[in-house]
Amino acid sequence: QIIVNACAYTAVDKAESDADRAWKLNATGPGILAEEAKRRGALLVHYSTDYVYDGTKQEAYVEEDPIAPLSVYGKSKAAADAAIMGSGCQHLIFRLCWVYGARGQNFMRTMMRLASEREQLRVVADQVGSPTWSRMIAEATTLAVRQVLGDSNREKYNGVYHLAASGHTSWHGFAQAI
View 1 (cartoon, rainbow, N blue to C red):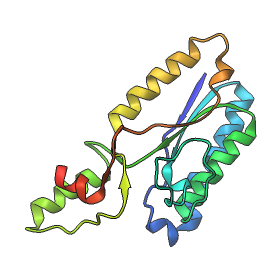
View 2: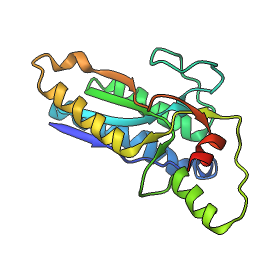
View 3: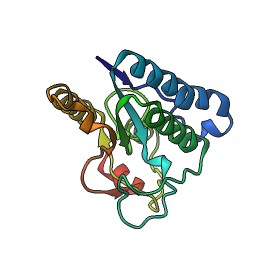
View 4: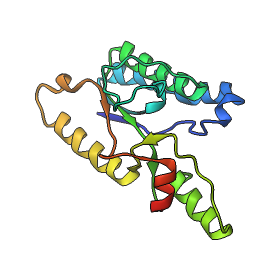
């Protein structure tokens, strides 16, 4: 009944030199999953990114804002979103922002490691976002899927949704909090 795609090539900078692999994982794979979800009548839950936007908007982005990805990573994730939406499968696409957690590679773990190795850290303060805990994403996904599956008119939930924590900070502010 449900396909959850949590797979992605998330090394944003490295994707520029490893575009083929990033494109396969971020665009081609989700497109195949969308076709399979359509064939089986399953709900596809897919995680996208705020990198589908160009980052120039002064306020928070909303789902209806036009996308304008600047990087291979952003373009490949935008291509996945388009393939899923174009497939005709029922889908929930969650656009995430600044994901961190206790496991895996993420900014929080990197800052913790660097802080134990160095006396000083230099972190940019000109980029602003909403650090979003991976556990919150998992819990929100669970609630959303339960709601969709429990509704006799589940098709009404089809679409793209932003899933990020409230508030905002810079990378520098986040590093200080860590």
